[in-house]
Picture 1: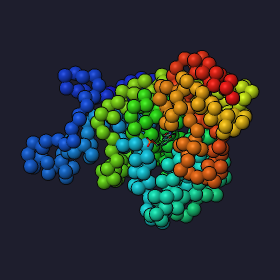
Picture 2: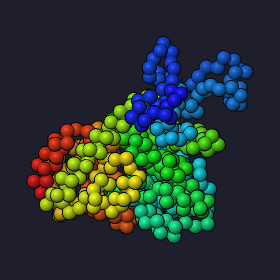
Picture 3: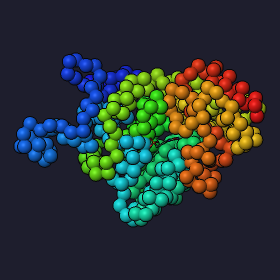
Picture 4: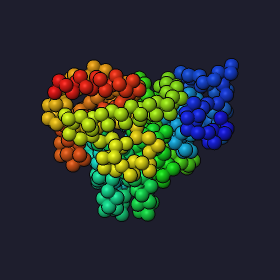
Length: 394
Ligand code: LCS
C-alpha cells in the first residue's frame, strides 16, 4: 500500500507489506522455491551484477520473505528489514556485521540468556569485549562506554526481570560517543514500543514471540534505517546464511495482521493478573511495567503504548514454591518461549537463563525464585482461576 505510513498501527498491521499479486490474490503467495530461472545467460549475469532487479536464489532474497520483511520494516518505521532463521540468528548477524576484533560492546544485564552467552563466549573468542550493566541507571551506561565501544545493545523490557531502559536517553549517550544503539524489541513489539522513533539505529526481534504470535514458528528479524546499512547487512546475512524460509515468512506475515489486537488483549489480561498476583498473600513481589510499584514506572509510561504481556514474580517460599506452582497450573503451559496466544509459565534460573551462570544471573536480578509468566489471550478469569488453584497447593 502506497499510503501505509499515514495509517494508524492497527490498520498498518493488516496491510503492511501487501502488494499486488497474480490472480488478484490478497495475500502474498508462498514462493516455496530455492532458486529462480534466468531468462538467458545475459539476464543471470545482469542480476548478479545488480544491473537488473529480480530474484536469484532464496538465501539471497525471495518474494514471500521480502513481503514479510517489508511489513515488519513498515511497522517499526524502518527502511528495510532482514528476515532470519531465529532471533539468535538475527542477533548474531547484527554483531557479526557491526563489530571488528578489538571492539567493545555495552549490553544490558537482563537479556535473554543466549544473547549474553553469545557475547561472553563466541564473540569474546574474536577479541570482542562486553561490559554488562544495569542500563536502567543511565550513569551505568555512561560509565561503561569506552573509546572502542561500537555498540550499545539494549533489551527492554529485559528478559526476564522486565528491567526497563530509557531508550531516548541511551541513544543520546551512544551517539555522543560514536556508538550505535541496537534494541531488542521482542517483549513489546512495534505496536507498544518503537525504538527507531526514540533514536535507536537498529531493531532486532525474535519473531518466534509476539510478531508471529502462535507458537508455531522460530524466526528473527533485523530492521535498519537506511539503504547503505541495509546493503551491508544483506551481504553479511547472505554469507552467514541464517535466513528465514518462505513458509515461515508467510506464517509470520499472517500473524502480524492480528498483532495490534493481540497486544491489546495481552496487556489487558496481564494488567489484571499482575494486580491479582501483587495482592496475593503467597506472592513476595511482582514486576510488571503497568504496576505503580514497577521500578521504572515513569519510563515505561513514557515509552510504552500499553504494558505488554510479560510478568515476572517471586513467591514467598522461593524456588520450591515456584516449582509447586509450575507443576500445578493446568491452563498455563509449563514451557519456555513467550508471546503466543496461549499463556506460558517457566523458571528462568533453571531454563532460559541457565547458560548465563549463577553469578551473572544474580547480578542481573534473576533470582532463583523468579517465575516468568507470558500472559496469553485466553479469558483472564480462566487464567486467574488456574493460578488460584495452583497457588492454593503451595
Ligand atoms: N531475544 C529475546 C528477548 C528472547 O526472549 C529470545 C528468545 C531471543 C531473542 C532469541 O530468539 P529465538 O532465537 O529463540 O527466536 N527467548 C526465549 C525465551 O525466553 N524462552 O525461550 C526462548
